[in-house]
Image 1 (cartoon, rainbow, N blue to C red):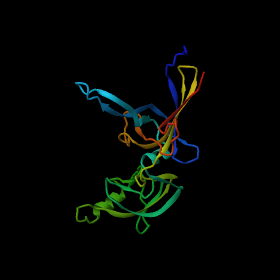
Image 2 (image 1 turned 180 degrees about the vertical axis):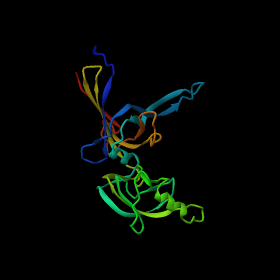
Image 3 (image 1 turned 45 degrees about the vertical axis):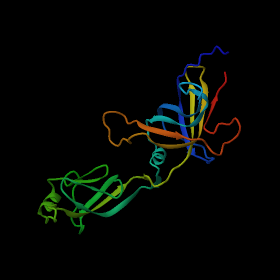
Image 4 (image 1 turned 90 degrees about the vertical axis):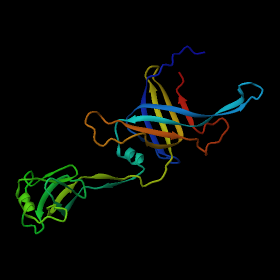
Length: 261
């Protein structure tokens, strides 16, 4: 028996790819607290010769398991897969004379994320409104301010049936290159999962765990705004046996390769 001490202090990365793909897998991003928990089915036969009907025979059969971890970053490819969506890259450009209704104290959401406001005018195009006086650019659109000439026009406008006063305007702005994710537009996907680690506590031995058939999902909420701490996104990989792997002595669930020292 070896006298080596197999204490564990592992670091490494997690990779995924669609099951059946031959392309190199892509990294999930930095993940912490990555753990595997197997699920076992206990099949038993009771012994009728005993008073307590204890076990006569049985077998422990693996039925699956879960891998859990916390994402510390959220690359676009990973977010797309977690949200079961599709991602389209939209190149940078300009939207000219985009129609909006200005309401004091509210923010008009532009069609694209605004990078810089070029000009905001009235419908006729003969009045140009002033930045930081009539409006201010927000991350998702344009907020209309009180105190400028536009505010005076809005105050003089006729209110609608809900008592809201507005003035039609035209917004010209540039928008950045964006990755547009359409969430929850795909059905269930199966992946291969690779966990590649090095044991820093030992002799820097390498290890790779390969899960042959997994599903991926958020294990909780997807943080959108949190100012008190860095966002940690919980991810769960649900593991099932790969029906394409059926060799004698071959695992259809998990393969672990350990560097021998």
